[in-house]
Image (cartoon, rainbow, N blue to C red; front, side, top):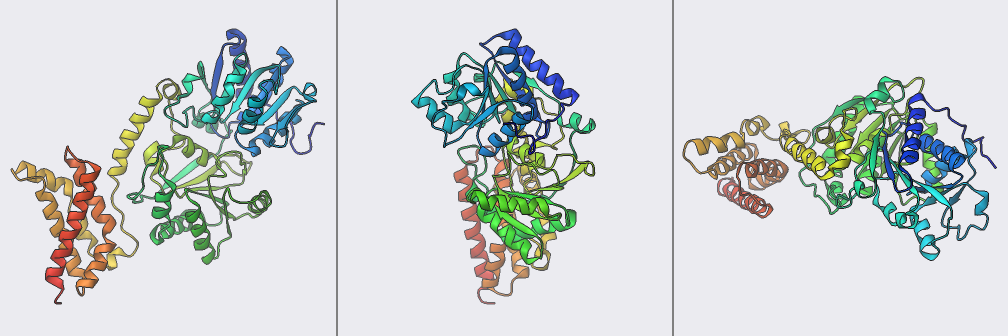
Amino acid sequence: MIDTELYKAKTLYPFQESTVNKILKEFADNGKDFNLLFQLPTGGGKTVIFSEIAKRYIDESKEKVLILTHRIELSVQTSKQLNAIGVNNKVINSEVKDIPDQDEYNCFIAMVETLNNRLNDDENFIKNVGLVIVDEAHYNSFRKIFQFYENANILGVTATPLSSNKALPLNDNYNKLIVGESISSLIESGYLADADSFTYDVNLHGLKIGSNGDFTVTSSDVVYGNYFMQEKLLFAYEEVAVGDKTLVFNSGIDTSIRVEETFKKRGYKIRHLDSTFSDKDRKDVLTWFKETPDAILTSVGILTTGFDEPTVNTIILNRATRSLTLYHQMIGRGSRKLPNKDRFKLIDLGNNVRRFGLWQDYINWNDAFAFPDRFLESRMGENEDIEFEVEFEYPRGAEAIIDTAKLDEFNIKEIYYDCIDNGLKGKDAVEKSLENHFEVIREASEDYFHGLEIMGFLKDHIEHRLKHYTKCITKSTPNYYKYIIETYNRQLQQKLRAVLEDE
């Protein structure tokens, strides 16, 4: 039965129609031993496009189509779109153990893990498949399925043709990349809303990089869960987005829960959502968010794909990421256009715009596909230097505690090079820095213990300055950085004790 009440068939835009024809021609020209990757920005209508490709492929080849997804929401969304355009389809979920009626269907939609289990038990679980379509193809979990469909064409679809695993590039499995319309082109043509970006410099020292190449959740919770970062988030929201329907993306659950608590105390309508919620609770939260005009939804991971709420007016990145894919996925949640919405706001609290450029900026995706290592290394190398140069931002109220101007006047890089130019040792710059911190703390302290409190208040500033110093010297290691911080803090404490202990 075709479910047309929930999903109406969408007429393809001219660029979508052109894309469908181009992809089908590529398969017709290159035969069965050919896999194609297609890139299109979030909001460009990937599901509409590949559903139409499935329909026409079935009509023309008389073979079946298999669509792979990694989340149940994407499976359901795709099934509704296929139903709307008259494609008989069946969703393979964990409850489907066999398909005795498979001859009644032309198209199957499967969660990758579920299908992998079924195929390992029976490699003919789904027969006569001529085309496999992979949604969110940058995820590597799909590779395990390809061995079962070596005689079928594979079409991967993604907004960012960069593998989620650097060691397993997408060009291992796909012969060619077709790049769709750019974000700026879709904006100019009226298909996507444009983004107004508001960036707030944040101190990211303390973030650690995990085995997946991105900042770890644990270190992110430490950085973003503290009082000063919560205050900065609240300040940014109140400066830019009060009254907007707002999505807040966080790295960790602890941070997101703290965001909910902080905003509730201020009287804002906000709810938290993460992957531990039951299906019913999740549905309740999303329904509330849809129906509440000025709602704020703070979340972790769960809304980056398979979520579509066009009325979102503000996206807040309350996290830092090194993943270009995740960066685009999060911002794309605000890019859906409505008759009364042709712009949305982006608030960046993770120096992400510095790292990746504006969301609308041109990206050479062909270069990323052909030379992923070079593409990533050049971008991260340049952007880590940019992040390193970010001016240190003190916690709110610091000016009432210490003389921040005196600290800012001291530039350790300039002092270092002055020392070298005058025949002194570079290490003398550290001694001068120590004296600068000592003088500022001494002037602000009532006694030794008060001095220790202020020294703790300046912990991030000390680490920030010494990291600048280690960038000046050629032979610096993480162990040396750790050693110099420990030595610096010990000597600073000794100087404070010698002067303040009797006061």
